[in-house]
Image 1 (cartoon, rainbow, N blue to C red):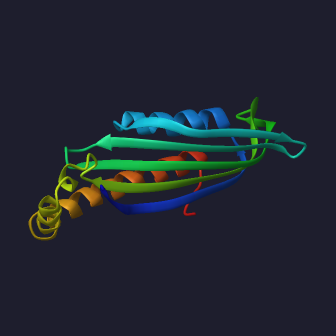
Image 2 (image 1 turned 60 degrees about the vertical axis):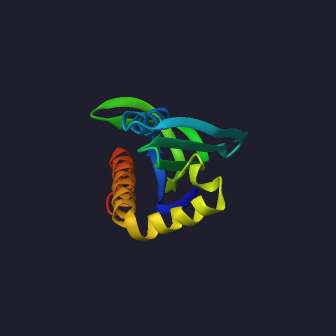
Length: 165
């Protein structure tokens, strides 16, 4: 079984005005631009008198080497989303109003294809290999993924114009 280590986890919340379509496209495109393959695992939408409730789950993965793979899971929960009109630079603009929460979880997967799991001796050798030989490499790749996930979060915050939250 592939070894997984959670490298970074963060939650972003915004209540107020934001453009759903632009935010969705920005978040999706950012992952693709960074070389991740993105698949939408869930999309549910409920309409009520309080507005739309939307749940979205994405799974983005990127093979780094044949031994390391990055995975970023993005979970959206949107409450009370309604269309709204705002005035920006003297022009009326249609946007959305409501509460959006985005959770980001970055995980590094070692041996994603279970090559080292086929025989008990290989399993033992893998543990030794990881503990004594490539420990600095594991730390380096985990650090890179953490930096990438932090950059993603800061880009989303900048897009939503959230500072220091």
